[in-house]
Image 1: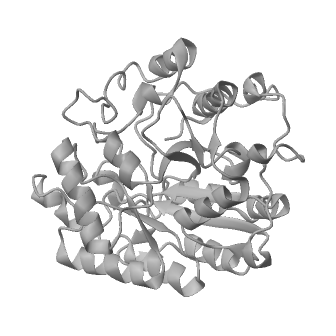
Image 2: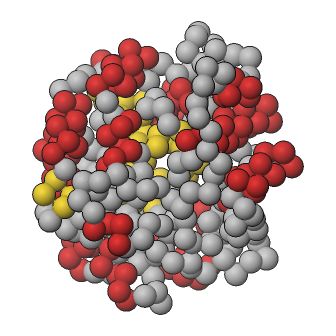
Length: 359
């Protein structure tokens, strides 16, 4: 999680999560090629590798956002959603139902705050999706997580369709070094992170007081996995949504494109990148935090406004994350990744971390 002090900057590029990754300058060798499998994602390939679609309504590409709720009060988020709603770009907002046992000072960015809850209900009524980000901003035990899921259903009429995991919550499932498989990949990750996330997360461990992955399997369809620098998420993670048999309690994982704050979002969502996304007929799931640099003193970042206005004029399909993932699954059927595909995906993600050091 980012520091509260950092959030006071106006329209600046916020840092990502605390960066302990080794950095390397990019060069012509493009280290990703070391880990590529021998197939061409954008060619006419088996259905599981398909990255180009005929999108509903004759649209040329798909674009959506998962907005992480970290530090997001009404003042730090409403202007962004007012703009998106006016433009017809419907996205997914991660939320915390709220853990009453948590720090009361943090309730104002959870559904324990009555005004915040009313805003969430208004967003849902307009067509935005509400996604899971945990019961609250701090670690929750199994009982608290179950109560949060039931509160979500009580407030919004259903369990969450999509979710993402909060860095500061130790009940995360298959997270930290558990995101990776085997000694090599996991060893590289632990060296890069100085072993700070080794055995830290235990939401998937049945003997832990934080275990809740069985509840996830029962109530949630999609959980976020790896994030990449490219705007075309589908080209980076062509299997999504996919099931990983080594992490069985998550029904399906999905990838995302890196845009943690206003600065990195605007670096990614350029006219050139959008031209390429449209030409490739791809799909983008941007992962960002609208509380980080998008709004200052109630004024929306003018660059973000301009980019979204230009985007809305393109022939894109602008639907929430869950709607997009449901469509992809309807098109290619349920996918369970193979060990080879898992290895390719994990090493591709690790390569991004080495090169860019992003969250």
